Length: 209
Image (cartoon, rainbow, N blue to C red; front, top):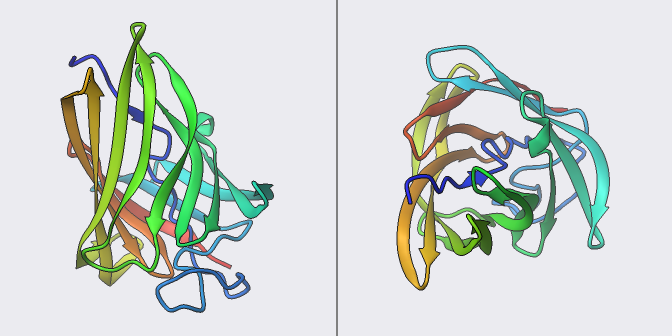
C-alpha cells in the first residue's frame, strides 16, 4: 500500500487574490469574494527558506456549468491547470486527482464560505484505479484556527489554518490517512501550505489588480 500515492493537482490552489473590480460573491465580509478571481493576478511560491520556484496565474476567463469561472495555470506544472469558480457557499475547482500511475479530473469543494474556525466540509469523494483495483478516496476539510503567519510576501495576523484529511479506502477499510494544511488570508489567498510529507511552501510575492 505504500506505493499508492495520491496526487492532487492543486498543490497551491492558488492564492487567488483580492481585486477591487471583482463581482460580489460569497465571502467573509459578505460583499467581496474571500478569494476573488481576476485575469492577470499571480502568486509566486517556493520552499520555506529558499526562493520562489512556481507561479500560479489567472490566465483566462471561462464558464463552467453556467458559472463564471477562471483558468489557473502553474508555471512549473502546466499539467495541473485548473478551473475555479464560486457556486453557492463554495469556492470550487475542477482539478485532477489520481495515483502515481493515473490521473482523473474531478470537481472539488475547496473552500466553504464564509471561513470560520470550526467549520468543516467534504472536499471530494471519488474512486481511483490502482493496479486494476478500485480505491475510494475521501477528502474532508476543517478550519482549525486563525494564526499569525510570516512569509517573504508579508506578515499576516489572521490566516485561517485549514486541515485537509484524505482517507484511502479499499474494500471498506481505511488503508491510509494523510493530512495537509493550507493557510488562507482573507483578501490575499493562500500564503502557506504544509504537505503530508511536512514540506512547507510559502508565498514569495504576488500581483493583485
